[in-house]
Length: 191
Image 1 (cartoon, one colour):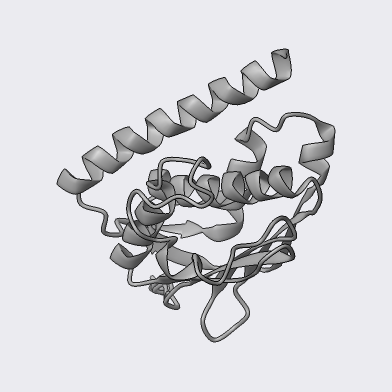
Image 2 (cartoon, one colour):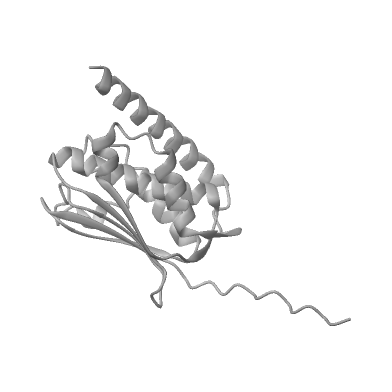
C-alpha cells in the first residue's frame, strides 16, 4: 500500500508540473536559447528520476554511441526526456515486462535520441493521436499533456519527434535534431 501511495504522489507531482509548464508554455517562448549536450541531459534526468526500486532502475539502460550538442533550453530538455522516460516505465508497468533503452546517437548525419521500450506498445489506431493535447492512451494513463508539450518544444527547436510501435511488443520514440556547428575559438595572435 505504501509503494502505491508513493507512486500516486509522484504521479500527481508530475501531473501538476506538466499542467503548470503547459499553461506557461502558451505565454512563454520555447525557442532554443542555449547549446546542450544530449548525454549530459539524459544523465541528469536518470540521476534525478525517482525510480521505485532497483528493479525499475535496472530496467533502464543508456547507450551513448556518440554525444551531440543541440540547440534547446536546459529546463525544457529535462521536461522532454523526463516525460519520455516516465511514459516508457509506465508501459513496462502495464505490460508487466520489458526494458527501456535510451540511445544517444550523434554520429549520424542527423543526430538523434531514441527511447525504446519493450512494454505494452501502442495500438495502430491510437498512433496518429498520441501527440494531440488531452489525448491519453490508455484513457486512464494520464492527462494527455505530456507528449503534446514534448512535440511543441521539439518543434520550437526545429527538431522532430515521431513514434513507431507494435502493440504488445515495443514503442520507439525518435527525436531528430539539426546538426549544430559550434564556432571554433579564434587562434591566439602572436605578440
